[in-house]
Amino acid sequence: MPNNELRPSICVFDVNETLLDIEFLAPVFQRVFGDPRMVREWFGQLILYSNAITLSGPYQSFFTLGQGVLEMLGTIHRVSVQPADLDELKARMLRMPAHRDVPGGLEQLKKAGFRLVTLTNSPPDPEGSPLQHAGIDGWFERAFSIDSVRRFKPAPQAYHMVAEELGVASAAMCMVAAHVWDTIGAQSAGYYGALVARPGNALFPVRGLPQPQVVAADLPGAASQMIELWR
Image (cartoon, rainbow, N blue to C red):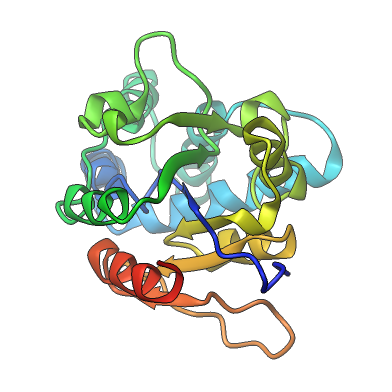
């Protein structure tokens, strides 16, 4: 847990679903499964298996795992997944658009004096990052990937890596994420937590687990609370 004498001055943003809209992937699932809502089952399984390999030791990139999970779900649901489907999934993962509320929320935080960085499970890509494709990379001073430590969030190594790279205490940072598993991981590593509870996400009300200090339905709402609390 963070040292309450420190106020966070750095916002560390999750990327997939927090900043970028994973519903952009839905056409792949509509075509393959006849149901665009399968993107949610796919994403949940992707997080499950990324954590499984972090706990067990081997490593493959998030995009490679995403393609493998698509093939696995095809087997489970007895539908054919073609190489073109796998290629389109990866291409769309690289080009997800930003949620419409994101630029406004980032502007609020930047004007209030927060430093902004990102930490994603996605690997670096030589063809350009998802942030670049979404047109929001200019807001951030650094973009970190777990690929450098080969441990997926919420493993503590990922959060400690950002603190070490920036040369700050963990309590100087707030993890801004749409997923409680991410805020739990970050807060357990000494960060503060801000939950952007986008559709399909909510608090995890279990006694004894870290609860985020900020909860809002969108990024501007979260930004307003963070400014009120820490600025």
